[in-house]
Image (cartoon, rainbow, N blue to C red; front, side, top):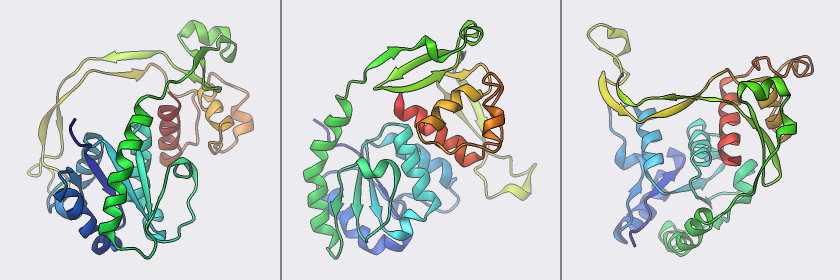
Length: 260
């Protein structure tokens, strides 16, 4: 059986501590993504990090107050949750965390060298991945969650492990080549972006309608922050939800991916 590929999410302030741990894991045969070794000048860092995280099997989060405050680390944690990657938090310094990480099995590394922690990570790897892979969710149809006129449009109510949610009708988008990046000759002010290149996009599905108030209402019921004028918006469940920030939209997508 091949070894799982590991992605290390951390603050750059902890590079010196992480380096021996990464070297120890690599010496044991693990494929480890560590930004100090993989990211290079001229890369589209956002795209590279997102692709690399999705290509690896388990995310190791080095937790310190600096990493918890890092927007990069938060995005990596959210993407790991959205793509259902097993997460191993390593507590390097006492950190006041919240959310999904509280449910993960932690490794305590406070005042410890990183090479022994690498051994602890290896000991935990075989326990983490099978637990995530074999989990069976209980899904029950719940048409009572959706008004009849929205049911007619294709909206579906479901309870998964007791959590209520509404999902929309989807449009199938065929795959094919897509041009990404920037033409630096035509747009010299954007040379910091990746050069124009063609990638093959797999077929995917897109919601037929903008996210409705009804769909978002169940996320709020599960603990998501309500947008502005939520009481007024809630009177029109079939309207598109508004006053949603980029972070709120990402949190909603992560919640939906985690539940489903």
